[in-house]
Length: 576
Image (cartoon, rainbow, N blue to C red; front, side):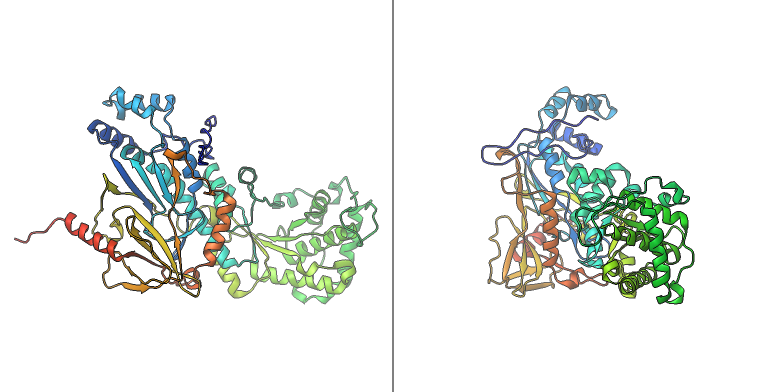
């Protein structure tokens, strides 16, 4: 499918329309069939222009946790900016059986439809968010706000799920660990792979292996080699070009001349390790003859990437071959003025192997001294063996020496919980609040257009999100406000906030030209916002085990209104 033409630019007031969605499958037809049938029924009945408001929200935090990271807003605004039915879209619709009884004038109406009459309020992308507090509120003519339902849900659900998953991995791994997203090959299709890279970066990952995501979004890319690269080598005879130019960027480690035979330096370095390092190690870590083909693979890769040498050391035996072979090549690189990066482990007991590998690295620096092996004790150890949140937690408990983690399958597929479960609910029509009732209280909606505020105590952390009707005065610093559970009358508390944060912002005003000036929906801004938002939460809300639920409440006025409307709408039973 050819890329769609971008929307026109901003207005004189600084508002702007966004470029098309990253995925060109995000068209006006990316909807469920019932939306077009409802749209026709609205149009047929003459109710399609009724002013309406919908909330997009979720009901439960994912992964057994007590927080969620909101993502997908930029793509939502791109979609809203470019929402139009093309001639091809309408031709397809007219030919479908579902449109058999639809009048031609309806399709003419669709042809002229866009989002110029909509207003969208949202929490900012990258923010920590909580159940029931709307992520988006969409206001406008009933037909249009109904038609865009499924696409908005699609753009928010997966994005927020991956961003939350990434943030949870970051919390467990700690701020010092490097987190690398390696999930493209296991993702649900190309869009799933690229989207996962984007939102994992938003949630706190440092880089991705996905080159297309790197190109699309400016995410740093990282990668080394696979086991097949090691297996593809038989011996040193495979290396035909053995000269390595001296690194012009480093001075003081060796003369500024080329290394004419790098392979010879590798052999000399391995012999040095055998003489001066091996005997200092515990018996279980002493190696005999290392694998020659692996040594050749490492040497050839170092010749190709002397400044970026990171070796996968578990093809044959990590401690008896991979680590000493890596160290031999790293020492040879040092003699040519280059610094190796480290090793990668992709199998086995990551705690044990990383600790023993670190011991060998430190023993090498101790035995050979700073002149030959300065910094070897702190070389990078990357692990990438089917890692997920539980593995990170276990490694932290048992101890490890890993400095970077490559995480794929569990991150991008969200294997622990594959869907967030966002919903899109009508909360107002013709200015009248609407409520959806259910025997399951969790599915009862909070009626009317609302604003939400986050209240902070004098000690700093956020303590509660409170929702108010749009006609209510916002909470004020230093003034007590009664915060009530929306449905349980006995759950209530006074809060005297030291700081009040407005959560809902106008992010789209079609009549004024689109996205207001000053609304930054960039990936960089969302990533920074995610980190800052998490810092302002109490640690017990974020912890891995048995986190404390965060309080979400409503004002006294909204509480009373919810229950008044509930009683008005609920049928009265009769006992006979």
